[in-house]
Image (cartoon, rainbow, N blue to C red; front, top):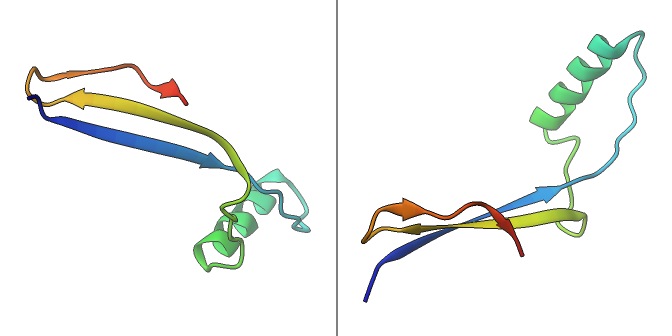
Length: 67
């Protein structure tokens, strides 16, 4: 029997509004709000999910694949 490690990656998406004078300021405001926990993505907004398999015994990885 071989040993495998499975990595699953999920991408969430949610839209938030900020008021700013330009793109750079909007990005700074959004980053700060995210880090402070003011912008929180909800699990129900799943955009995609993918999986990679690592065969530990034979030491190889599969390509990432959506499932």
